[in-house]
Length: 253
Image (cartoon, rainbow, N blue to C red; front, side, top):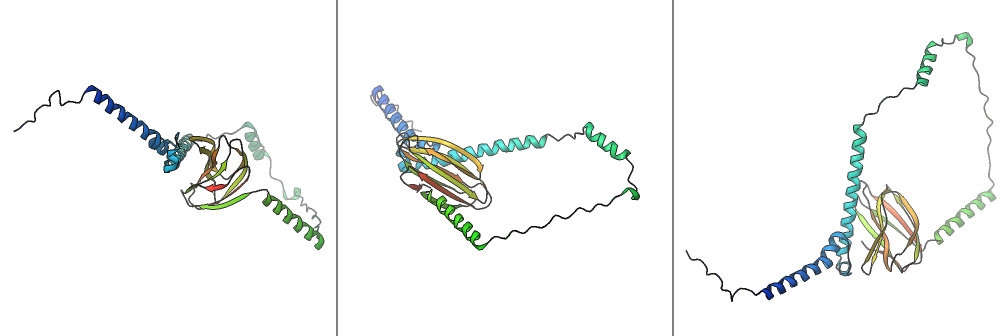
């Protein structure tokens, strides 16, 4: 059996080489952490490289799924606590008095019964002339046209069970956009957030919300909008309407 020879002192790396190799490894690890790990796992993209590589979107979805799972767990715990506490019957003294009075009071005799017939209310019929009907239709059409005119963009999309999508507006810092969205088929989860130039912000989050409206003010120049996810067992159709100071409405996912 042959044992390899121990290396000589001259063959061993010097302290300088070890320090240099350690520094190089630390720099490479830090670069991977900032450009790959943080964007893909936590949606943190200080350099913007994760957004170009498509890793930041992956991190945003992971964070959204984690938050939804945490909310589901909290709701399940609350429901379990309510089930574990049995309801106690309550009977007030007033209810007991009413029962006792009903028992003690003798039943009325047939002679004491008095039949009362309520007078029938007169039936009134309202007829609307053709001119009034035409005027009402014209007014309704005008209101619908005015309501449509206030929105600059309107999109409608259908989400299958578990599916998510994202729509964002290109906005300058301080710009304000007015929005309104509603879901048909069940409530949905949403996350209103923004990103761009290494910045990211979450404005509002909701779970099981059927509709929402308001103003979205951009905290910085970049993309600002909504991530929607359908947690129902059926398809849900969402209509999103926007107007105001923005460049364009884009579908990101």
